[in-house]
Length: 115
Image (cartoon, rainbow, N blue to C red; front, side, top):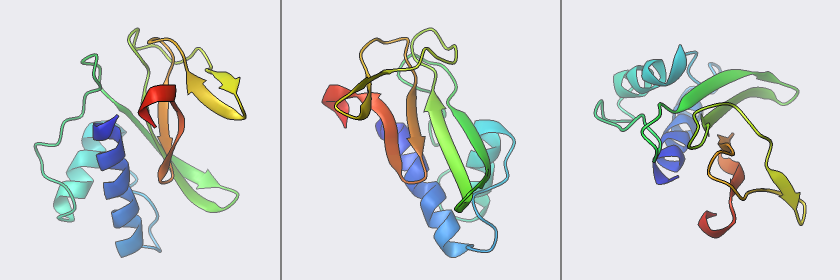
């Protein structure tokens, strides 16, 4: 999760430096790392893999509030889903195959003990 947080914070810095552009319009996680490296925000050796050795997923797009981005680990099975159970109004990951999601500056779906 620290890799995801570091990468997400780098995207936030990129957006702060380039507010008219929004998040990098990169093709996947390797494109994101290339864009962040070109702008001097991240090192080219940044780790693009989750704790299970699967490539992290990067997506960007427009939202009702402007631009948005998501960095996601699809969990131990490297497949999108299943949706995490909502506990106390939060999307808490209870199983290793559930996705961990960092979006627009914070984790929106995460393991209970790791937030």
